[in-house]
Amino acid sequence: MNDALRPVARARVLYADTDRMGIVYHASYLRYLELARVELIRGAGLPYTELEARGLGLPLTEVHVRYVAPAEYDDIMTIHIGLARLTRVRVEFDYRIVVAAGDRSGLGQDVEILTAQTRHACVRLETGRPERLPPEVYDVLHSCYTPSRD
Amino acid sequence: MNDALRPVARARVLYADTDRMGIVYHASYLRYLELARVELIRGAGLPYTELEARGLGLPLTEVHVRYVAPAEYDDIMTIHIGLARLTRVRVEFDYRIVVAAGDRSGLGQDVEILTAQTRHACVRLETGRPERLPPEVYDVLHSCYTPSRD
Amino acid sequence: MNDALRPVARARVLYADTDRMGIVYHASYLRYLELARVELIRGAGLPYTELEARGLGLPLTEVHVRYVAPAEYDDIMTIHIGLARLTRVRVEFDYRIVVAAGDRSGLGQDVEILTAQTRHACVRLETGRPERLPPEVYDVLHSCYTPSRD
Amino acid sequence: MNDALRPVARARVLYADTDRMGIVYHASYLRYLELARVELIRGAGLPYTELEARGLGLPLTEVHVRYVAPAEYDDIMTIHIGLARLTRVRVEFDYRIVVAAGDRSGLGQDVEILTAQTRHACVRLETGRPERLPPEVYDVLHSCYTPSRD
Image (cartoon, rainbow over all chains, first blue to last red; front, side):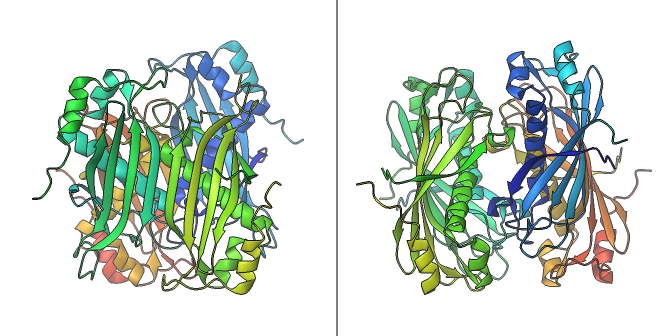
């Protein structure tokens, strides 16, 4: 587990996110991973729209989610994220979603909802072809590495 | 109520469609209206992709849904649609979603789930500006009018 | 148009919300209407979960949306809401979604995205049967009426 | 790669599934995996609703998707699935989504869209606690194993 994840987004669970089991539908969490991702890189100085303005995108090539405990309706989820790996053509992020004590009625301690990883390739939007990350973009992404906690 | 609606699509309710009330989330039905719409015009000889290939689109300008009874998990919904109104720049559709007897375990008679209307404007995709429907497209859409049942 | 709507929620447009026209998919807005609704009544002192704890719900019986201009990827939408009508068994809300100047790159003035209305019936969750709003719930909802701007 | 996957469902890509990159949003595929899953076990004689009628569910504990090539608007996707592993408390499925030649305008050969795995635990719905699969349910699931192609 990547301990160096930072909380970058919070979101309230809506009816829209739940399913008839009364909990968040497994696919609904993926939008919150996206939310964390764009906020992380925006915080580093790279709105995703700027990447697109250069004709580039970072589509997912892989996602892996381990569901630990269900988030419930009206919970406030905190989404943690960290840059896990960066090369000239690939980016990987680690995630953890937590409902913190106090963010669910009557909840006395933090509950880990899930952990996840996503892998992305840099592509030219027009063609879908892989392309190297421009050096300035690479540098901004590189700055997202969380300093290890020594 | 438009009696001249035709059943053009059937779809099974998934967990993905439900919410914690155990029934279909109100917004989930809208994708099934879209499904009926594209099947209606495809059946008339106009795949929506052809419209797009001409640089045109038919985005929604208005939607109105009356929820009559909830569809439940595993129901098979039948989506009925009819062309309600057509001008050189606008299209309107009427819809009715029904769960037919036999399409829910133990259901002895048809249940009306909702009725809906959508209104669309013809626009140039690049600019979002309104544009007149090309005559051939207008003719295809016009052929979707259901003959009245005399 | 209901002028007495209050901004109660803000949300960033995600890729998850968009469609291939490059704008927000028409059904995606409905979750933001839900967000505004729960925040309005929570602000008045009635978390929706409390209503459910009494065995009651407020499912939609009708929704009407007029799409004025598209919200775009990365926009920050502000969702305005007001209580439009309240009886012992029904609640209606009015909504307006706006992208304010500064909440889209390069946007010099507010853009109205849509206006909407939803109508809800009070029902017993177990049976789906209509039921009168408990007086305390009615009173809380009643306090959501925005004072008119004289 | 599991070669013994069976095509159990077909679905047309809607606008609802796409994002502004013009292709299917990565999370949208998950509903199609669900579709394949329920059709596989229904075909074996176990509607998921029967499992629920016994008070049991099979929530996801893990999902892993490798995106190979994007599905596009109006494509017809074929979803293949196979039972990958079965124990008394766990079920795993393998998936492959393909757009076959002819199921996209102008497409001359099959395109593999993604491969995926999901892992599920049997739980009592009321409590969320793990529980052993009832023998009859186990047997039905076991019958989903695809005979190897000798």
